[in-house]
Image (tube, rainbow, N blue to C red; front, side, top):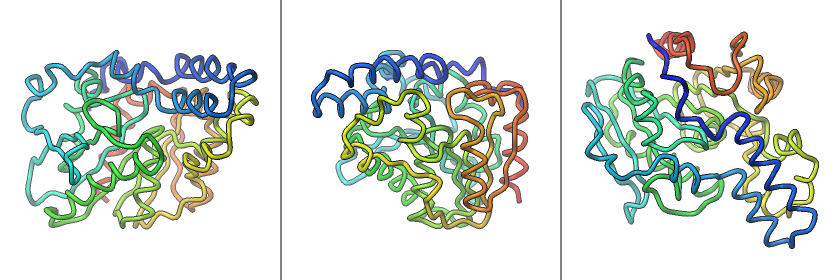
Length: 283
């Protein structure tokens, strides 16, 4: 299975994202409390920049079969796409990172390869990302994932699995703590958000506690309900350290697959991680 081309959908990951976090949090020393919260929000959820890099104009006309658009929630605020390749096949909820939206996934080729995992697939954009609206917080993002899961559960005749990457891994852990999933695969997860921020700069300690409370994203202490859990992490990851993935796996007695010579953004480059995902999801 070929890899996704050049990981183009992750431009705000890795070095760029790390510089963004550091630059924004440097303002903390002189900013007021309300400003600090906004600074932290922009660092964790750089969705305005993602939308600028990957505008949604023309997305619908560029989407090709088997993908279809979907609007979820009572007010239709959550934008998603799904590929139902076989009504009898199991379903996969894929939750992407914070440097991507649906257009980025289309451009990178991710939408092309996801249906090759032998599952029907749904992918959702988080609030204020792409065409989605809603609350920019842990609860808001988790709600997007829950809406996708519940839509699938209403039509699925088999099992439902969840794969999340980076921020998406944190969302996946929260989803699986509120809904039962068959496979839970976390790619490049962190332990909790504040610990990750402190890995970048100690100034993160000055961000108001209210922000961390509303955006704890505590993957290590989450309580997922799943038949099978696997953590995949690049050994050379400099954005979310490998040790965090190992700690998450240990906390949940999950499997751990270390991707040698891989960082944060090149996990899918050679196709081996997709091959592993395919094998795991057939179990």
